[in-house]
Image (cartoon, rainbow, N blue to C red; front, side):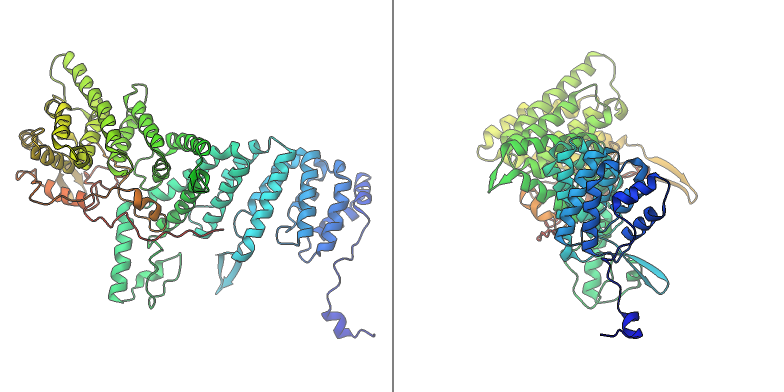
Length: 606
């Protein structure tokens, strides 16, 4: 049949046609100084319209001369590594993985380049779209193809690991460097984290490093989304929906276009950073569950190994980080699987608190974690609570003894006695939350136990912990202990109030006077959990604050100026803070049981 000019112009040439000689011949000519076929080969490999059959043929030829592909041919190798193999046919994918296996076995100099190429596919391919002269390049690839692409990447990594046992040593830095910027879309972050966790399953030696990479990035999100900002965003969303009014604030939402005529998605966090964090927390919590629970039962060995890895990351990253709100719930959730884990975690915190070799800031953080964990984890029985109090209280008494033995008047100095004060506050905080459980069953024995703690000596010692602890903790502790006639604190509280000196702050607007109601920079790490999707796994494990009836507990009538307002803020979800405090975090007590106990859990699978 005769081909017209029109047919010729509109019929693309077959890509199975190749120019130049075989790969072996091309490399031989290159060695002799003839670069024409070599450059032609690179050009054809880079053709975006290259056919599968041609890719397979070339890969087979490259495998036959793999020993010749030394570092002198790195530009040719880099061209091969840019071939879009993950979205090709199964035959191409298998041939490409065989080529990678041969390459890293014979030429280990290209190992890192191969690993970087594979890790690049851990996130959805970006589709660049220009609209009105603006580059809209944050569009995700089609989700339906992602599982296949990701599986091929993991198959390739497993093959490389089999041929090069030292792969993990080179892989970890690449995983760190290739982690997407935390302001990327939730989908991008989800896919990358999902793939890192999947990788840790078949290369378990790098799991601790993988967790450190992921949690380190998630901490950036956590500390940049304060509790007050999250609550404010949620409140605004609800108010906006209820009023039905469209505001110009939608113009500044860079994450997604809001449809004002549709009801808000209750699974989505209104705060964009919190929404990203929620997605990642859901993936991490599901991973912990999958690792530890096998066929509905707890796999002891795997759970212990994960606990050790997560505890290492906790010590390195989470414990030193002030003002994180949600990341610490990873270990909270893991400890809920077995009481032995929770007790091991408490023992670990206790060792840090009582160790003089540890920095004071870490000892204070450990005390905060210990008190908050005992108060908020409803899976911790009262026997464990009492056992921890039996560790904390004697240590506090020994500390008082050591100060009394020095003679003279011990000053109320936070810089000198920070761990002591945080330990006292941890005890007060624990008693506030768990006194009901301690007294339940046998009131007489419970009261005898509380009286045996000799709390009166603690509150009346020269270092005066009631002066340093948060006013809300102090007042509720005083009310509870007065009700059961365990210790009477109000005389000390009133005396402290009379001697409470205000601080004068100078600014451009003039001098202002305020009182620092949080001199310890108190941080209660297990305050109510605010993230919606991941929160459903936390809710059943969490002890919400149930505000006692006014007839049961009465706070003192005489309080320092401004402290009553601070206490109300504290109970409503915000830790009171002085003007000079930086990076303060929310509270402890929560009068609304629904906060931190979201009803819906949702996890997207990559």
